[in-house]
Length: 133
Image 1 (cartoon, rainbow, N blue to C red):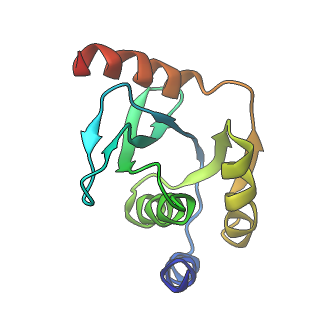
Image 2 (cartoon, rainbow, N blue to C red; image 1 turned 90 degrees about the horizontal axis):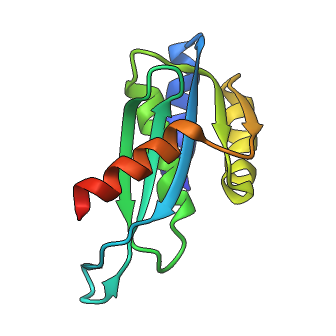
């Protein structure tokens, strides 16, 4: 959590003024992998996509075991910090992601919206299934 606070403070100092939307969601991959502890898992994939162009801004893979949301938050902040196109609004489908991001994004003056479908992420998911077959 300390890393997250440092990242928030660093991003605040950057005085970013985002104008674009990002869609963010995560889902379980169909493929199985062996994690660093030797467990066979279906990992979770965080995906950040620009909804108008379907450009994939970033991805991050985690084991579904344990508390993965802080790791996702840290990665999202990494992408905000390093992106040339800072978001003005982030659209999410999962309520737990919304709850986790709400206060952080408010501090960064980035609007957050809970939506029923993340169409660009769903498109990525569909295409990734083809790729991993």
